[in-house]
Length: 241
View 1 (cartoon, helix red, strand yellow):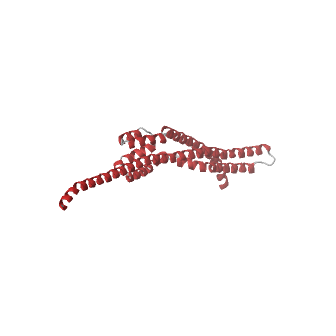
View 2 (tube, one colour):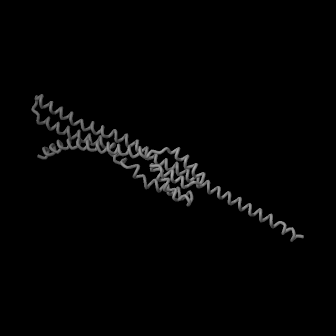
View 3 (cartoon, helix red, strand yellow):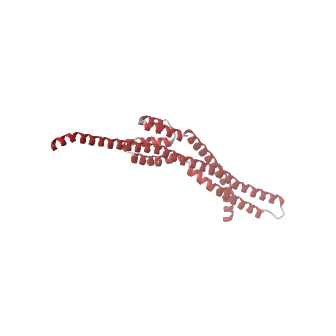
């Protein structure tokens, strides 16, 4: 009695596994299309944008640099734009905000990767599970088939062939998911690299301005000291006389 119930569950399970794989494949395709569209609409020429930032910041036009970043849809530009709000607080503050902005926006450009990675790793096993259930049903049919019945053996072989379809479907579902996971994982890393690259331009500009201000201050102080020495020398000569 128990075996019959298990066989009945196995018969239903093989079909359920196939339906499950079909549903997962639809979700996988939807996720792949959504991620492709997300990154396509937010492409950024990081070399060109970095050059523009460098020129604008060297000329001291911080507002124009912010406007340039704001015109870009890329998440890396949004990260650097947020750090520009701390431009007056020095390079250390900008560096910290860059790191914070990357952490805050990571769920946006890594969305869907967990699902694709999990599906790519486990879809073949789900298909294999469906195959095992199908073969279990086929062997049960084989036990019920009378010896020498060619028609019954044909049905059993057909059931085994159908059960192997689950493994094939599982592999077919896994392959696009794995490929898409690797591609979009690389694009997510590129977003962080782009933010770091443009952030380095901002930090370098701040350090250059700070060094220039320090140099000018030192020169000004030396000039004042020389002027003071120049004006005090006659008085000292008269005192000596």
